[in-house]
Length: 219
Image (cartoon, rainbow, N blue to C red):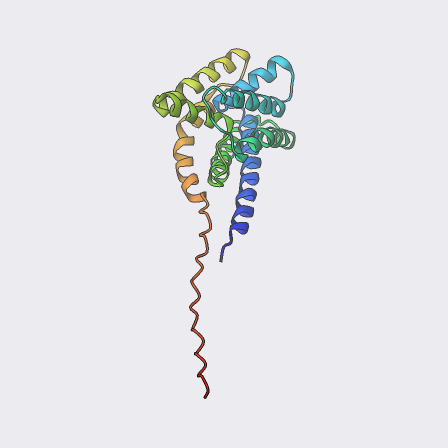
């Protein structure tokens, strides 16, 4: 029988693994060098202009986005905080381990692997139920506070960061378009598949007691 303690351990483990995979998947897409997701275009652009490491900028951008939650009264969860702390370092580890690809075939394969890993990681960390990452939380928070359509909020945010990142020198390419078209359907599969259900609260059955027999009076 699954206990609440076991469920919590599994949820935390799934969250951490998911966030590590998320950062590593980003690194694979970067090494594919055929374009990356809009937020990563922004990160690449800032890295190009500042000379700072990609992973460090990922953390800093996540923290700055988290500050934007304050005026929309969005509350962070454990998953939100760990997202800010873990995705950047795991992305940097991936960049250290995986060299940049030069042939078109290897670029496509590495990018596709990164995209698949990000979709899997999204299902893992969101399915753990500890709250969204700072970027997704900004989108859902604006939607909740102002009632704007979710697709419109996401489009405005991602087009804005994509344009800024491109102007700063980030890599916009066919991979960027592939990410925009495919990530939605992919996470639509992984999130329901990997969402953990909470352990049921044990039901304590009432204990039936048999009344003690009355002592017969003597005499």
